[in-house]
Length: 355
Ligand code: SF4
Ligand code: SF4
Image (tube, rainbow, N blue to C red; front, side, top):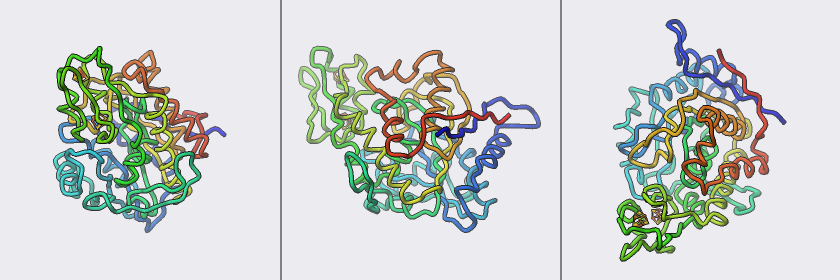
């Protein structure tokens, strides 16, 4: 099966700017195939950890919310709390961070909600036919929404190679219990002979799982598998145990996405913003130097196709596998293959350019 992926680059003219192109793209998708009048429609975003600047800007999110209102739906902009301690670990901190980053009722024209309750406990269990799970735990307000538009900043990721629509909804839409289950076996290892004992990993570990005495040591029981230590180590002494952890994590996040797909057949649309393609997740308090030039916006009703197309566009623009270049241990194709096996979409796509 070949899926359609709509694409708009960032070129503009005085009488046709990027918002015009985005609007046309949503009409052609069509967004009305996934969202009906009266729907409580979740716009799933990532508000960015405090200090990060690479997340999808509120003015783009508003453009999506406005289109949902045009269709008669009732949009709200949302994300679920994080597993690790930071500026988005509970709804109070999360909303304050969202507001600091410009996501407010007045800027979006709709409410901002945190989807899994004050401390991440608001969860809905959904049956799936996965390899790892028979049930997944999804953030309550995303699971209970009538429709979802998944608005994603497409970038690199230290564990999954890239972070796109599959990760934004599959991992990001999990409740705290779901996220814990997805990260359960991702604890990395330190190569003692490479470690210079600089202590950066310990300082950035949200779980207090690293001690440095001579070299860094990770307490596997405390580790929550966030991957921060991999990202900050200046000498690449912290490595994934690739055969188990990150591969399993990618498969597990596709199984959580399968939970949403089972709850809302035909009611989810995906929009990837491929600009400031940062090397790692927006969960860090900095954005980092982009690993590829800005590309444009992709949209599809198929999460596998939209991510496959976005990957190909980034790598073409970079002139190399931009994700492997920064995360040589992370095989990003695992998530695409796993999602395809689960019947969530197709890696084969037709790219249709919106002029
Ligand atoms: S992955 Fe690294 S930084 Fe994250 S919790 Fe585990 S040891 Fe700490
Ligand atoms: S950041 Fe890397 S070099 Fe520094 S203590 Fe941690 S493992 Fe060792």
